[in-house]
Length: 283
Image 1 (cartoon, rainbow, N blue to C red):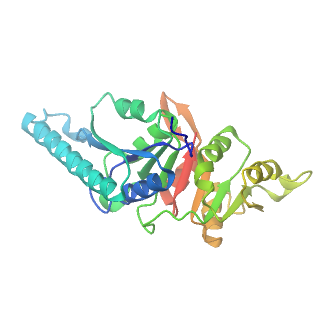
Image 2: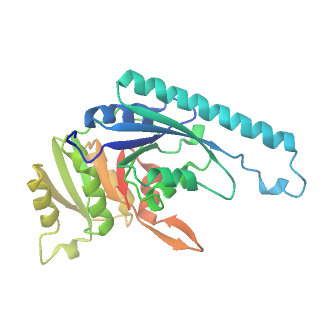
Image 3: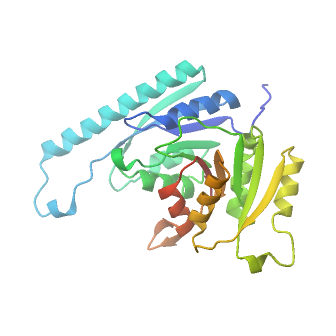
């Protein structure tokens, strides 16, 4: 029986329907480094009908044509993924999934629950894809899969050299660190950052526990504390990452239920909307 060298052995990537498909290139590169199997998921999302048109029946021809176009785009994306995975020399599989109204992402969520790591691109406002933000939420909170989110701009490869861990001692942050450990092994520097008010730093050494834990995994770790002077944890973390010229970040994903919908917490939403570096999240 083959010995597993990494806890990330089964990866998935959500394939962008158009554009540079940076998430696919990064996922293929990572799969090669981790000796992991990579599955590409291309979504054909049922067309969204504006509410103001619902007063009149929607022509059947329009719905059929839109569905066929969505399926064709997904098949094109799947073929592009297969070409990238083949060129990278990684074992792969691809699947085209149709998202039906009323079902949401149930099929996709079911497929990704056993994924060790899902790679997906941030929604690009200049080439927005249907329900991309909702899909990221579903992967994080319903599939409960560790998710590496790639910014839509500024990042063409996943550099592992300088890593930041956003640490608050929570279960979510702990799961994110655990999921990130195989990737952290590639890092040259790991900085644990704690965002807190200065008065809360008294009476202890915040981060000593996670620092010692990571050191036992052979990592060189520095713990830093920053004050949230702007009352915005997400922006404080991103500003810190920019100041430290970090390559990527690890953090817990937070959300809460409201009217049966899983909504992102403020810091998580802010990070996803304005991120400037790859971020590995876990809930």
